[in-house]
Length: 69
Image (cartoon, rainbow, N blue to C red; front, side, top):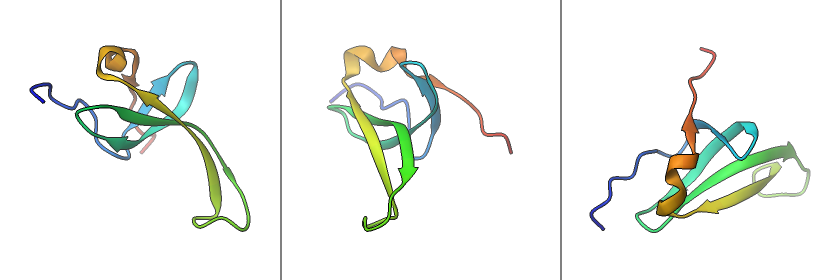
């Protein structure tokens, strides 16, 4: 457990070429990064996502970005 989780759910990030990515889940075991999201009718939240599991050894590849606000 000892490693600090460097991100929170909702943080805007850049990952694997996606400049529109954001964090969707965090734990000490892995973080999930949403790299693509699009509207989709008939789904629970009205959209579909591509989420990538990123293990602690690769957390350094996730770059924080600030919002436009």
